[in-house]
Length: 106
Image 1 (cartoon, rainbow, N blue to C red):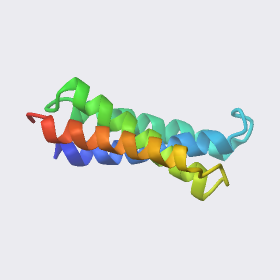
Image 2 (cartoon, helix red, strand yellow; image 1 turned 180 degrees about the vertical axis):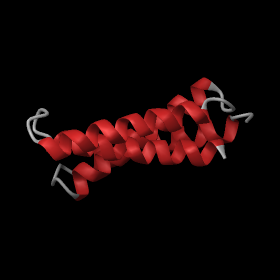
Image 3 (cartoon, rainbow, N blue to C red; image 1 turned 30 degrees about the vertical axis):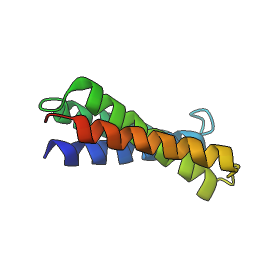
Image 4 (cartoon, one colour; image 1 turned 60 degrees about the vertical axis):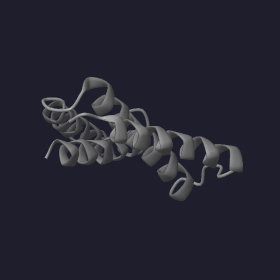
């Protein structure tokens, strides 16, 4: 169950990062509310996952999901650059996430 918590927490990290972008520096109410709600929920689920997963694995996977997901949201939704170097960097982060999963003892 810890892995489910961790994956959902990572997806919520993508959600709050995206909401923060739309909050325009916390000047728009509903994106700001979503940023706060999703970030608190993400931290709560990360905390639950860390009860049984190693710190380095849990935090690395959580931030990796957030980084890759946010980069993809930027590319797919916000029209950010999608050049080859950027995509290779995203792939390397994914490789790191997989590596942490494979070497985890929990």
